[in-house]
Image (cartoon, rainbow, N blue to C red; front, side):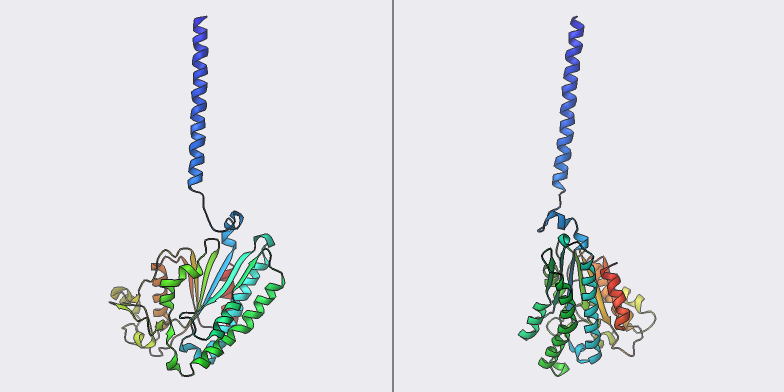
Length: 307
């Protein structure tokens, strides 16, 4: 009888200890989950849908490139295509999941208040309370207002020498994280530029690296023959790294064209400069598109925004 009682006691103790171990495992598991929980400044159902929430920023290069009428014509068509890709995406979403936005940037900020007022109009946000009419309104705004920006910029600087340049390098160094990256969205930056980079107040050089690339500076480099890539890599030519940890940003550069007629490899060199620069800053998805017919580039834009 005593042996049976002892066995009963042992069995009871074993059950209790087993239950305690199980509770400990469950508690540990819960603590681990709590530590890895993702936090954001938007509702959880929006954060969970992050990759389907578009945050498109467009950077306009308002340097002397816009003194060419064909550049303005192409840029305005490219902008129409970007807004069309944006609204096409919005149309596919359920109303409750709408959390999408699109905006326009320059650097430096134009001194003309009228340009800034237009840029403010082109800051579009969609949420669950947005009316359907806003889709059409967005397309109309981006079809008409950008041309006015170029006209105003040209009126302010009628001579190409009056253009100080567009500071893309400084924008990446000081503004890109604050202006174009949201932890609740898929972040896309579209840059309309000719591929060169220059501003009179941002001319930094460190060895064979620089914060700028102009037709004149490119002409001085030994990169005009078929061995340009080997020379570029061996000499370390390129842009100075402006930022880091930009993994949450996708970049589409549109409008690259050569202003170096004596260098048949100029576009290849520019593409290498941009590619290496993006890689060094941690940007994982990007595309560098040459200036081309608007109808051709529209397909590129649509494929990038809505893959």
